[in-house]
Amino acid sequence: MDIDHYNVLGLPSGEEGANLTQKEITKAYREKARDLHPDKRKDDPNAHENFIKLKSSYEILVDEKARKLFDDLLRVKREQQRRFAQQDSKRRKMMSDLEDRERASFAPDPAMKAKEEEERIARKLKEEIARIRAMQANKGASMGTGSGQEKVGREGNSGVGGHVGVDKERVLKVSWEKIGEGYTAEKLRELFSRFGEVEDIVVNSSKKKGSALVVMATKHAVDSATGSVSGNLDNPLLVVPLKPSVAEFPAPKKEEQSDRLSNLVGAGYQAFEDAVLNKLTKDETKGYVKQPWDMGLILSVSLLPHAWSNEGKVGISMMGGSGCSFWGWVVG
Image (cartoon, rainbow, N blue to C red; front, side, top):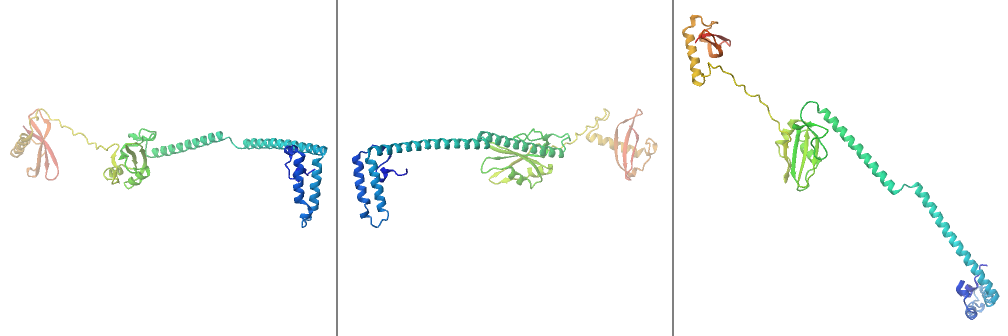
């Protein structure tokens, strides 16, 4: 039965309709009958049928036994609808839980997903570090790491004492004040590339002062960069070599002089040479000199240290005009 007699009379149904009095039902019927009477709805083809339904519903509700059966029927239907609603709610909840479990079984756990992402990034970073170190090692090998020279490498952000060595005389130490935008590795490479090839740059970050190590390909590039002004005018770079080149000169050897000639210095030594030359001019024909020569061709005469003989003769060396040198003995 799909007809709710309370609703036909315009009354509330359910538990509230079951508590209505017969007087309230009769009053509602009279009001509804005046409104639905066929004489007032001549243009409505269903007016007579609607009025019959209204009268039938009223007769059922004013009959005590029929009304009780109808109320019981409504109560059973309400309980059935309530059970269906509960079952539908449980069924929907069960279906929802099942779908959630299925999605959870296929979808990764957020914590697990975050951990896997972290491990992936760490693994990628490790591979990148290994690649950079291998590249630096190959570069260090090409620069001749076995030459025995002192090396400077990069370690962390400090840039010195690392696993890859370079010649310290090819390294520039650059510093600047922490004002303005400062200098990045790319900016430093651009500035120092005009002096020669830049092999590597290590920037050391500091709050008070910025600094970097710039590895040039040649020592000539280091000298050129050291002697030039680099950087911005409002914040110039202080450029110095990490290890200045030091020219090595052989220590002068102190000639040993014999005790016999130790007093022949300055004017005295020159006077002695003049005396020997005069003696050679006077005694040319005496044969004391082992090699004859033309005295007019003599350009210079010098004594031979340590050339004293037991017979009181002195060794001399002379340079002739023809480019030939002679030596001999002269009586002291």
